[in-house]
Amino acid sequence: MTIHIDEKICKGCGLCVYYCPQNVLCMSNVRNTKGYYLVAVCNSNKCKVCHTCEINCPDLALYVEEDDKVKG
Ligand code: SF4
Ligand code: SF4
Image (cartoon, rainbow, N blue to C red; front, side, top):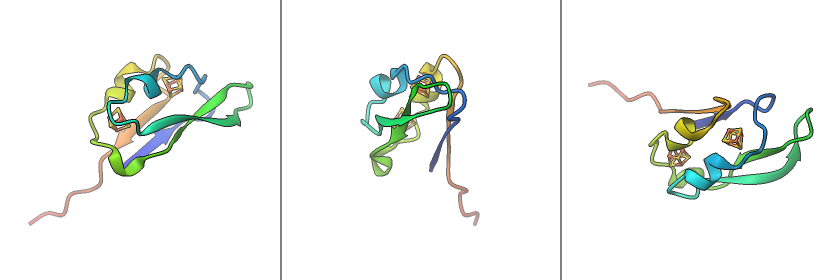
């Protein structure tokens, strides 16, 4: 599982942090070029790949990619 955050698009609104049921995401103290504080992944091992964060981001700034499943 990989959480991709587009640092150019994220505006630090914190909605993904608020809605994640697993407390995977958190706000960082890093700003993007627009001056917004960026969201960060703080507990990646807790992620259930539910996509709630994606659905609640108003700017489509992040998405969660599942690991490739081994076939056979
Ligand atoms: S996919 Fe679900 S558990 Fe994982 S970070 Fe997003 S909201 Fe949290
Ligand atoms: S909801 Fe989207 S814009 Fe808001 S902090 Fe999360 S990734 Fe950034």
